[in-house]
Amino acid sequence: MNHSSDRIAGVDEAGRGPLAGPVVVAAVILHPARRIDGLGDSKKLSEPRREQLFPLIQRDALAWHIEFVSAEEIDRLNIFHATMVGMRRAVAALSIAATHALIDGNKIPPGLPCTAEALVKGDAREPAIMAASILAKVARDRYMQRLHEQFPGYGFDRHKGYPTAEHVARLDALGPCAEHRRSFAPVRERLLFVAC
Image 1 (tube, helix red, strand yellow):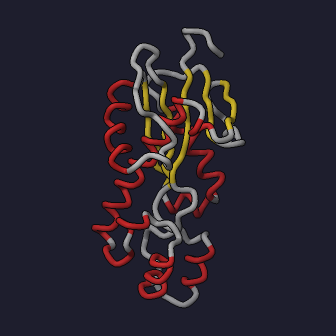
Image 2 (cartoon, helix red, strand yellow):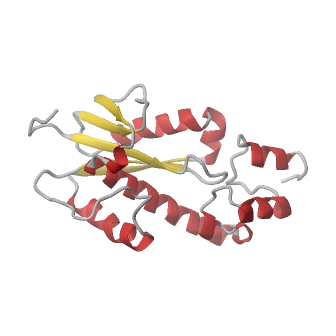
């Protein structure tokens, strides 16, 4: 897949592990003539660096899309299927159709509108996946920051919904909020004790 006319979309997600908030998927087709310096695995880049790269990717990529899959949808489908659905929707929503998709991980979502391959640790190997991982991570972190303003008691601005000791302690004290994933065991267990 190295033909110059190929439009290869990198696809990655952020937020599979948290107890609250959406899983966010991004798809990015990089522009062959516009190099974006400093791309890397979003987990290894500092927050200021990710924030710096976010608008550059949006400006210089050939096409990009960020897809949010809600906590409610995650509960309905389970986190694996919700991620697959998000990946399919992100690729399908690109303003320029991809001819091929490179998916971070070891599974290819069903129903993609183009051919695809899965790349384990793709966010460390493939620039288009790196760009997608940055868009997904920054978009999700910003969402969780807004969620913190809505539900200030949980510390979403700090742990972003991940199951830290602080988050679990706040869950114990307050019970789940509307954005908590009911299908995840630490939340489900606390539903038995607390009426929302």
